[in-house]
Length: 151
Image 1 (tube, rainbow, N blue to C red):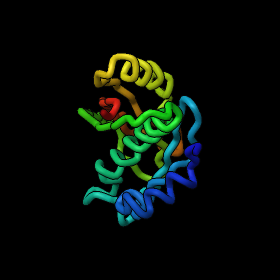
Image 2: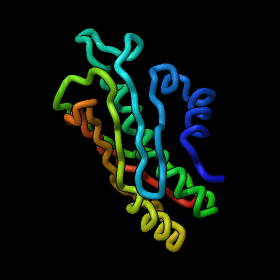
Image 3: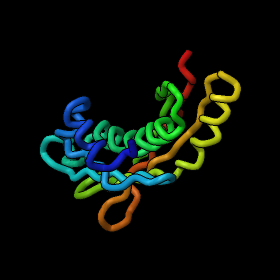
């Protein structure tokens, strides 16, 4: 079953309610790219009247994680996935509508193939950039994903 924005957003409603209720929504996903939007609102703000860093992190992680999940489903193999490490840089206050994009889907194919071939866990770094409505970068998140074929 192919992952679609609607399926992911519905899943988030039932399984990750904090993602859903803070306004994080997948807008598009394809083989290489995932785009997620979140609008600065009262429910997701910090005391400085901008978007709380953790909400930005949820949106950014979703762009990378949805791509990993889609590729795992595509492989047809039982593969576990886990964020092993992450870091972020914040360059501007996040207000208004913030769009996070990850274009690293191509990195996942090699890691999955190697995990299946060797039976050993693999790691890969993926990046998600958040920009405001004016196209100004507000944050960059890097996630190290660990994948392993289940035995």
